[in-house]
Length: 236
Length: 113
Ligand SMILES: Nc1nc2c(ncn2[C@@H]2O[C@H](COP(=O)(O)OP(=O)(O)OP(=O)(O)O)[C@@H](O)[C@H]2O)c(=O)[nH]1
Ligand SMILES: [Mg+2]
Ligand SMILES: [Zn+2]
Image (cartoon, rainbow over all chains, first blue to last red; front, top):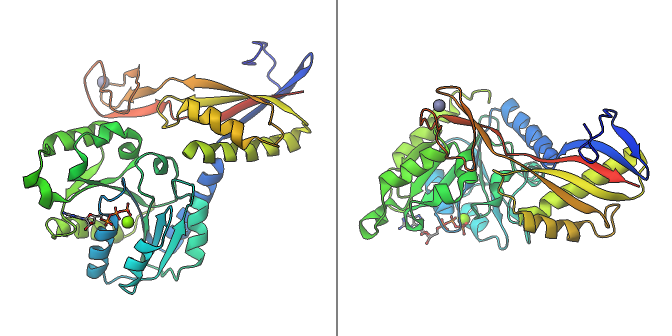
């Protein structure tokens, strides 16, 4: 039925006196989703484990990556997304890991097209890993599929236990929540159970790991998670 | 401001639709926006007016059609309206729910002269 005039003309184009109504039926994210699918296929063909790290600014994503790089023996590349500067890429580059910085400028998120180009610039190895640190923002990046195998949302204890329900889209779309900065818990009034309940309520399937990237507590759980997801790589 | 990127995408889609259908001016865009998306209607309207400048849809009116969030309970099969991702099933109180609508960001149709 025509939503404008209520007529029952089902053809794609029809006239009402002076206007045509043209059915379009196109998703605004279609282009991004197509690029994401290309990335996804590349990852699958090359058995690359790709992870999209998302969080608000300063939760500890780059610190987590630095500590993880120290532990890994598999070939790894990193894509860093920030509005400005190459500070995070410099930090990763110092560890001898190939890294590509994407500055989004006025944009607030990475998209699948940017990732495709960044991948061209990186020496991705078969059976390796690709870590993507998204722009610090709990809203916008949730919308944009990059073709990643897993979405990891990093929440830090100083942000409060209500973030999963305040930013439900992000936590709803994540596979794993890392609760970082656990070393600060003794100094805070942070209710761990409430935080986990909040995360589970927006996403019953979400996995949760509590750790301190800085001090090391709980990091083994994270390394085990990575190991488990990487071998053998499954079709997603 | 992901609304800006969404409207830039919209501009491309409208250009393509105009080419395919030989349109010269688009006067109205009917857009489905799910209640569960993190899209702000006022921001979207603002972004639309900015992004459509000097395009085929520069004079177009944006008609936003909200789509109610709906979920399906995986435990008892109940389907129910949901304003959030975290509404438990009103019948059995299970959290094991699946969103079945409310995530749309779709250009449904356009009007042209
Ligand atoms: N106490 C504590 N501080 C941490 C931990 N992890 C990171 N930090 C500190 O948090 C601050 C931000 O860390 P980054 O790793 O730069 O955070 P980020 O998420 O990459 O930040 P952006 O990329 O700017 O969004 C730094 O001062 C880190 O030392 C942790 O586990 N415990
Ligand atoms: Mg960082
Ligand atoms: Zn139920």
